[in-house]
Length: 132
Image 1 (tube, helix red, strand yellow):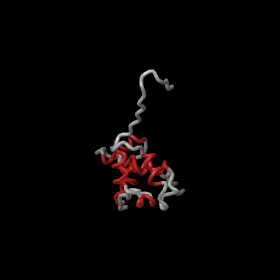
Image 2 (tube, helix red, strand yellow; image 1 turned 30 degrees about the horizontal axis):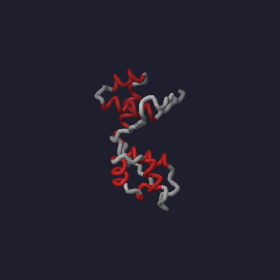
Image 3 (cartoon, rainbow, N blue to C red; image 1 turned 90 degrees about the horizontal axis):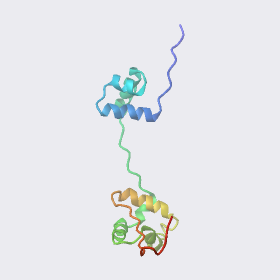
Image 4 (cartoon, helix red, strand yellow; image 1 turned 60 degrees about the vertical axis):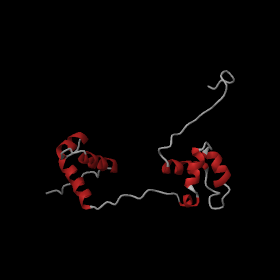
């Protein structure tokens, strides 16, 4: 008698989707039908996720970000200073952060302060210029 071949391992996206649908309260049969896979496959990946103790991943913080005073950055930007201007005046001149590009500072700023709205204001008298 021939050995039974193993099926393909599901990609991490599929496994995450199985877990997400289970967290929404769907049964194994409903999950299998929604994803177009076998009920036993759903059962296998749910059992695997229950057996493995997953720790929540720590939030990433750039190693250079410890040298930046984020309260000062937030204070300056809330008073109207542009983040690029703050970067030029303070961050780029510091020895520990001199090699940090502006884009990295911007990403870390958005990570730390996600609820601060991004505004782009161009104030000029009406009819002075036309931008397309």
